[in-house]
Amino acid sequence: MIAKAIARHVRMTSRKVDYVGRPLRLLTVDKALAQLSVGNRRAARPLSKLIASAFANARQQHPELREDEVIITKLTADQGPTWKRFRAAAFGRAARILKRTTHITVELDRPGVKTLPPVTRPAAAPKAARAPQPATAAAAGAAKPAAHKAPRRTAAAKPKTAAK
Image (cartoon, rainbow, N blue to C red; front, side, top):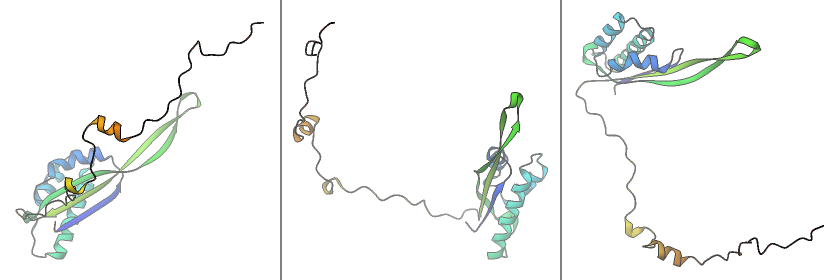
Protein backbone atom coordinates (compact mmCIF):
# COMPACT_ATOMS: atom_id res chain seq x y z
CA MET A 1 0.00 0.00 0.00
CA ILE A 2 1.48 3.33 -1.00
CA ALA A 3 -1.54 5.49 -0.17
CA LYS A 4 -4.84 5.39 1.64
CA ALA A 5 -7.89 7.65 1.91
CA ILE A 6 -10.96 7.33 4.13
CA ALA A 7 -14.31 9.10 3.83
CA ARG A 8 -16.44 8.76 6.93
CA HIS A 9 -20.15 9.38 7.52
CA VAL A 10 -21.04 9.50 3.82
CA ARG A 11 -24.83 9.90 3.75
CA MET A 12 -25.55 6.83 1.64
CA THR A 13 -26.07 3.14 2.36
CA SER A 14 -22.99 0.93 2.23
CA ARG A 15 -24.78 -1.52 -0.07
CA LYS A 16 -25.28 1.12 -2.75
CA VAL A 17 -21.69 2.35 -2.48
CA ASP A 18 -20.35 -1.21 -2.64
CA TYR A 19 -22.47 -1.86 -5.74
CA VAL A 20 -20.59 0.93 -7.55
CA GLY A 21 -17.20 0.27 -5.94
CA ARG A 22 -16.93 -3.49 -6.38
CA PRO A 23 -16.07 -3.40 -10.14
CA LEU A 24 -13.37 -0.77 -9.50
CA ARG A 25 -11.13 -3.08 -7.47
CA LEU A 26 -7.82 -3.93 -9.17
CA LEU A 27 -8.36 -1.25 -11.84
CA THR A 28 -5.88 1.53 -12.45
CA VAL A 29 -6.82 4.94 -11.09
CA ASP A 30 -7.39 6.49 -14.53
CA LYS A 31 -9.69 3.63 -15.65
CA ALA A 32 -11.64 3.77 -12.38
CA LEU A 33 -12.15 7.54 -12.64
CA ALA A 34 -13.23 7.14 -16.28
CA GLN A 35 -15.81 4.50 -15.30
CA LEU A 36 -17.16 6.65 -12.51
CA SER A 37 -17.48 9.71 -14.74
CA VAL A 38 -19.79 7.93 -17.19
CA GLY A 39 -21.82 6.08 -14.55
CA ASN A 40 -25.29 7.24 -13.58
CA ARG A 41 -25.13 6.39 -9.87
CA ARG A 42 -25.18 8.80 -6.96
CA ALA A 43 -22.37 6.87 -5.22
CA ALA A 44 -19.99 7.65 -8.10
CA ARG A 45 -19.30 11.21 -6.91
CA PRO A 46 -17.97 10.45 -3.40
CA LEU A 47 -16.04 7.46 -4.75
CA SER A 48 -14.33 9.48 -7.48
CA LYS A 49 -13.44 12.23 -4.98
CA LEU A 50 -12.00 9.63 -2.62
CA ILE A 51 -9.94 7.87 -5.30
CA ALA A 52 -8.58 11.25 -6.42
CA SER A 53 -7.70 12.06 -2.81
CA ALA A 54 -5.92 8.73 -2.35
CA PHE A 55 -3.93 9.35 -5.53
CA ALA A 56 -3.01 12.84 -4.30
CA ASN A 57 -1.80 11.23 -1.06
CA ALA A 58 0.33 8.84 -3.12
CA ARG A 59 1.79 11.75 -5.09
CA GLN A 60 2.92 13.36 -1.84
CA GLN A 61 5.28 10.44 -1.20
CA HIS A 62 6.08 9.57 -4.85
CA PRO A 63 5.83 12.66 -7.10
CA GLU A 64 6.79 10.67 -10.21
CA LEU A 65 3.61 8.56 -10.14
CA ARG A 66 1.09 8.63 -12.96
CA GLU A 67 -2.57 7.59 -12.78
CA ASP A 68 -2.02 4.60 -15.04
CA GLU A 69 0.77 3.21 -12.79
CA VAL A 70 -1.34 2.78 -9.65
CA ILE A 71 -4.12 0.27 -9.01
CA ILE A 72 -6.88 0.19 -6.41
CA THR A 73 -5.96 -2.74 -4.17
CA LYS A 74 -8.68 -2.27 -1.57
CA LEU A 75 -12.03 -0.51 -1.73
CA THR A 76 -14.43 -1.16 1.12
CA ALA A 77 -17.75 0.39 2.04
CA ASP A 78 -18.44 -0.33 5.70
CA GLN A 79 -21.60 0.58 7.54
CA GLY A 80 -21.41 3.74 9.62
CA PRO A 81 -23.78 5.00 12.27
CA THR A 82 -27.48 5.15 11.46
CA TRP A 83 -29.42 8.34 12.14
CA LYS A 84 -32.87 7.54 13.46
CA ARG A 85 -35.75 9.88 12.65
CA PHE A 86 -39.51 9.61 13.07
CA ARG A 87 -42.34 10.51 10.74
CA ALA A 88 -46.02 10.85 11.51
CA ALA A 89 -48.08 7.81 10.56
CA ALA A 90 -51.76 6.94 10.55
CA PHE A 91 -53.80 6.71 13.77
CA GLY A 92 -51.36 8.81 15.78
CA ARG A 93 -48.44 6.43 15.42
CA ALA A 94 -44.86 7.18 14.44
CA ALA A 95 -42.97 5.50 11.60
CA ARG A 96 -39.21 5.13 11.96
CA ILE A 97 -36.90 6.45 9.26
CA LEU A 98 -33.34 5.07 9.17
CA LYS A 99 -30.81 7.38 7.54
CA ARG A 100 -27.81 5.15 6.99
CA THR A 101 -24.21 6.31 6.60
CA THR A 102 -21.09 4.68 5.18
CA HIS A 103 -17.35 4.67 5.86
CA ILE A 104 -15.46 4.24 2.56
CA THR A 105 -11.79 3.18 2.48
CA VAL A 106 -9.54 3.19 -0.60
CA GLU A 107 -5.99 1.82 -0.72
CA LEU A 108 -3.66 2.19 -3.70
CA ASP A 109 -0.55 0.27 -4.66
CA ARG A 110 1.69 -0.39 -7.63
CA PRO A 111 0.77 -3.46 -9.70
CA GLY A 112 3.01 -6.47 -9.20
CA VAL A 113 4.25 -5.34 -5.80
CA LYS A 114 3.95 -8.16 -3.31
CA THR A 115 2.38 -7.23 -0.02
CA LEU A 116 3.23 -8.83 3.29
CA PRO A 117 1.23 -11.93 4.19
CA PRO A 118 -1.48 -11.49 6.81
CA VAL A 119 -0.47 -11.90 10.42
CA THR A 120 -1.41 -15.32 11.74
CA ARG A 121 -2.07 -16.43 15.27
CA PRO A 122 0.66 -18.45 17.00
CA ALA A 123 0.28 -22.22 16.83
CA ALA A 124 -1.13 -24.13 19.79
CA ALA A 125 1.29 -25.59 22.31
CA PRO A 126 2.46 -29.15 21.61
CA LYS A 127 0.41 -31.93 23.17
CA ALA A 128 3.23 -32.90 25.53
CA ALA A 129 3.13 -29.45 27.15
CA ARG A 130 -0.62 -29.57 27.75
CA ALA A 131 -2.22 -30.96 30.89
CA PRO A 132 -3.06 -34.68 30.60
CA GLN A 133 -6.67 -35.40 29.67
CA PRO A 134 -8.61 -38.59 30.53
CA ALA A 135 -8.72 -40.98 27.58
CA THR A 136 -12.36 -42.04 27.75
CA ALA A 137 -15.64 -40.89 29.21
CA ALA A 138 -15.54 -43.76 31.75
CA ALA A 139 -12.15 -42.59 32.96
CA ALA A 140 -13.48 -39.06 33.19
CA GLY A 141 -16.41 -40.26 35.31
CA ALA A 142 -14.12 -42.31 37.56
CA ALA A 143 -11.94 -39.31 38.30
CA LYS A 144 -14.84 -37.33 39.82
CA PRO A 145 -16.54 -38.48 43.03
CA ALA A 146 -20.24 -39.20 42.63
CA ALA A 147 -22.47 -36.53 44.10
CA HIS A 148 -25.12 -37.69 46.59
CA LYS A 149 -28.64 -37.36 45.23
CA ALA A 150 -31.72 -37.35 47.42
CA PRO A 151 -34.37 -39.91 46.43
CA ARG A 152 -37.28 -38.52 44.43
CA ARG A 153 -40.62 -38.30 46.12
CA THR A 154 -43.29 -40.43 44.55
CA ALA A 155 -47.05 -40.44 45.01
CA ALA A 156 -46.79 -43.15 47.67
CA ALA A 157 -44.19 -41.24 49.64
CA LYS A 158 -46.27 -38.04 49.90
CA PRO A 159 -47.75 -37.43 53.35
CA LYS A 160 -51.50 -37.94 53.45
CA THR A 161 -53.75 -35.16 54.73
CA ALA A 162 -56.93 -35.82 56.66
CA ALA A 163 -60.14 -35.39 54.69
CA LYS A 164 -62.73 -33.06 56.17
